Image (cartoon, rainbow over all chains, first blue to last red; front, side):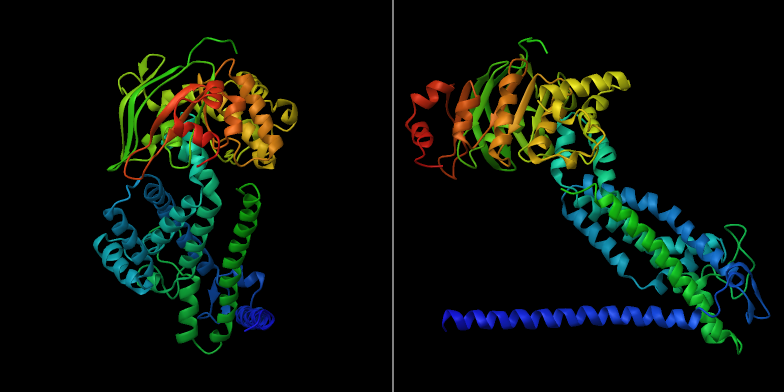
Length: 287
Length: 262
């Protein structure tokens, strides 16, 4: 084949690749837009100030979803408090201190596997351990602890990955100045890795906020007043959605789109705040 | 900075072993205080490995054994009762191949070392930062930018910032591992000028691939070589730079310097 023909062929492949890749990107975007657009158009009619700030009335056919909003907020907050400190510290250990041995690899693999366990299994585990053995009953605490088990591996992995992104030259520079390993991590490595750690943690938490199966058996009720203590049973948005869509009385299945919109909007806003913060941080961290 | 004649190294039969592989063996050399010593040789000849012994940065790699004696001002730096690596590194600073400023302001970069060693007073830090930046010939360019992020500086400025950062702990010795290899000629020139001034108060050990650079900046030159992969690298010869470049006693040195290999 002569040179010219080969070039022509390469150009054709280039064009085909561009079209195929572009089509896949467009398809993904289309699905996302359809998803958000549909939820928005079905739900917007129900969302009002009253919907978010009032408890439900008349078997969920009137009023709002305040106890579920508060419940999801508390469950997520509890999960954050239980997982972030432990998860970040475990991630630091794995990235900065753990020896490069077989045992470390096994631990890392086990953590990765934990992240892949179906969430309903965590629910069952939470029911057995937190609700029954610990005697916490169905409560915000038991639900948050169950969600924490599911989120912990995500946070450990995110922390470890974020720390590995930091060039080892920075660590060496600090050590060569006579800083201890702990100071090197605290003053140089962690601040540089913070955007990655925070992003990973928030993604893990927003996943937890939307989970239904783990809280189904450990925390939620069809109807409950606003939770006032960690031991209260609570309503939560994902479960409220599930129960309204499957078992509620005649008008309720329409209102469920309002709940879906609130859940999606809440998580999106959280993610957008983090994305903005992160891109601000990123500008300071190029190497 | 006044001359105090501190910072001389005495190496006797030093070997470095990674795991089961000996990388460098039998190095005996004297590095005099307040002068510039260049380590030259082809890639993989153990120059950087040897350099990292002088501030015990090899310790951080793990699974490294160092044999022989390394004395700094007469004290064995591998005697854990006499010297702590953290304290040693305050006295023996290092500048790396690629500029590696911390992701923080120019001021905080230079103040990092002193803060690590307990300096807290703002006025004292201000003074150390200015002094260190002056010694690294960067003060004039950055004196109004101290609150700026270090990554806003050019590559050459970043490397001089790293020199200032290392000087801020007032080390007796400054180790430089190919400090100009990633820089343009003008920045290289500035780093070399800085080295020439610094040697009045600090001992400098510089690893370089660039023989002209070794000839320009150093007082002594040590030529290292790994003859074959079966044997560890060793010191071929060491002497006054002028002598090494005009009249080397070993044939291999002559061949390397004249560019016949490496």
